[in-house]
Length: 98
Image 1 (cartoon, helix red, strand yellow):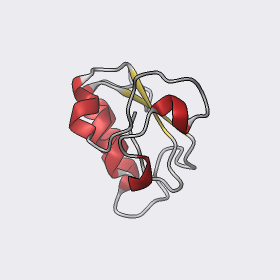
Image 2 (spheres, rainbow, N blue to C red):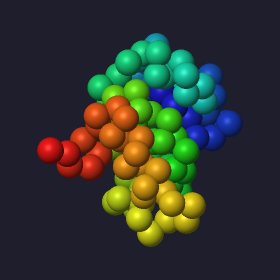
Image 3 (cartoon, rainbow, N blue to C red):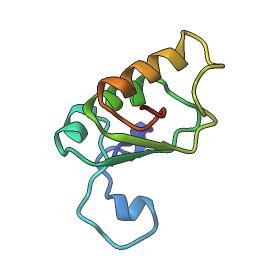
Image 4 (cartoon, helix red, strand yellow):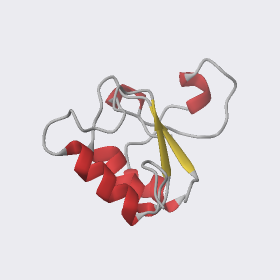
């Protein structure tokens, strides 16, 4: 489980969610998450952090987010183009493809 806040690092995911222990600990190490080769990552930030899905998408991992992101076209620093390029590298269905 990826943690957006330092206070959550090392804590059990179940405890953070008010549920029984799952044996899964919160981390901020993106490389360790990518090594698990999940089909999908759920990203629930307080504010969209484009760098995180931009790292995940090229690995072919789908990203589901609650962020008001849609396509990223209205965010600074060419966020939309960056996300689309990352999704295309990983063949992610973030954007439709032929």
